Length: 79
Image (cartoon, rainbow, N blue to C red; front, side, top):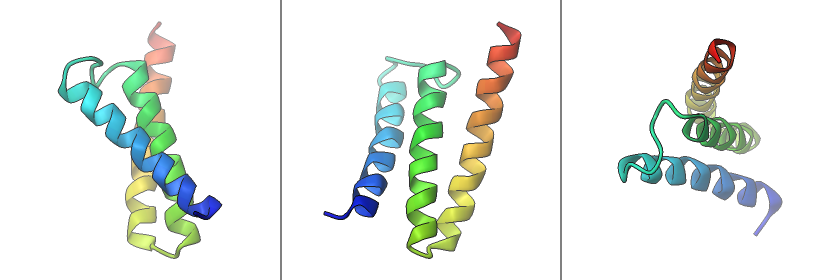
């Protein structure tokens, strides 16, 4: 397995773990843990998609990164 492929799998795992934990009510969608998993997962998938020339997925993950980062920053400034 190449490093690029490993990065993609780690990104997918972060997103899926966050989704599953939220689905089973272990974390909430507005929690730092959920947003951090989304941010890291999306960053890794963004890198993977860009490196593979999968530009529709670059766009999706770029937006996902922006929204996750925005919400994390917003939550931090309220605390």
